[in-house]
Every structure is written in C-alpha cells, then in structure tokens.
Length: 216
Image 1 (cartoon, rainbow, N blue to C red):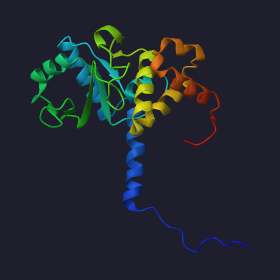
Image 2 (spheres, rainbow, N blue to C red):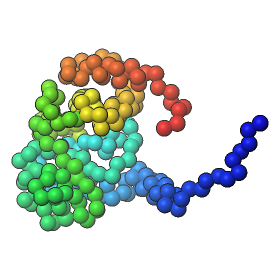
Image 3 (cartoon, one colour):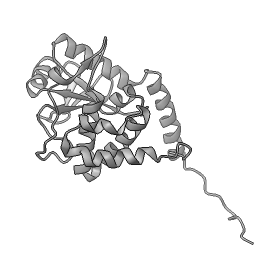
Image 4 (cartoon, rainbow, N blue to C red):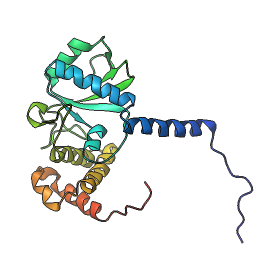
C-alpha cells in the first residue's frame, strides 16, 4: 500500500503573496477599478480631444465580445502619423516612451504600458502577409465611449498573428474562446481573408469539441 509523504511542501511567502495580489487585481479589473481601466479612460479622452481615430484591441477588446480576460496593459491601434501627433501633445505630460523613439508608451500616472499597433504593419511575425493592421478611421466601430474593431477583423488579425509567430499561440486560443462566446457559425469564414481561412476552420472545429467542465 502506498503511503502519503511524511512532509508536505508549503507555498513560499513570495508565491502566496503573488497569488493574493493576482486575485485582488483580477477583482479590481472586472469591477473596472484597476489601473488599466484608469489608463484606458485617460488615453481615450486624450485621443478624442486630439480627434485621433483609434481602436482599442488586445485583451480589453476581448471582454467586449464576451471573453473575460484580464490584462496589465492597454493595446491601441493608431495610424503612424497620429502616434506622432499624440507624442508631440503628451510626451512629458503623463506619458513617456518605453525607450527613445519607440512606438510603445507608458502612462506614468497609472504605471501602465500602452502598446501601440500601427496601421499597415503586419501581425504575428511582423513579416509581409495579406493581412495587416487596418486604418481605424475606416475600420473601427464607435460606441458612446469607446471604439473597437469588428469581431471579424479582430479574429482575422489574431489568426494571422498566431499562425505566423510561435510566441503568439495565445492569439489562437483567444479565437477559440471568441468562437464559443459568440456562437460563431462556420459560415463566418466567408468574412475572413482567404489567408487565414484554413486555420480558422481548424480553430472553429476545435471550439465545437471543448469540454466546459475542464479546469482552466
């Protein structure tokens, strides 16, 4: 008969503190009280003031489409010239560059990174492909407070990203969850660029066989 080990390892104080902090921040995030939400609101207010078209992307946009996921930064899609306009107006006024000349910014008041995606750049490995980041002036859907990309565009970009960059596999998992949460039908494939259709069909089939009772 097997015996239980005589000693059970304990969590280190550092690991336990990270666990508690993570749970606390997740609660604040889903109550819209986190530093990320503060940075989001500040950014959108300033872009609106400058009349700069934008689209919020990344994990924050996933929440809008029913897939709840926390994040520690704000991802925004801008045109290259509009990023420069924003920098001229706000660098040194609550925002700093991650490094000199970078497209990435940091909200110094909220201590939150602002990751900027630029129109015309390519998702995933950054190499030229049929799918690129669109112009938010033409592609974003505006609400009363925020502007987001349509679900089809968001999925298209995430599939292109995950299928070309091994370090971006989370994007493919995000697509599976978006398919489930939005009850996306297989015919949705027709709204996507042919470049991503085969991979989307694979992800759609995977989404149909998921076991909701499996732990995350």
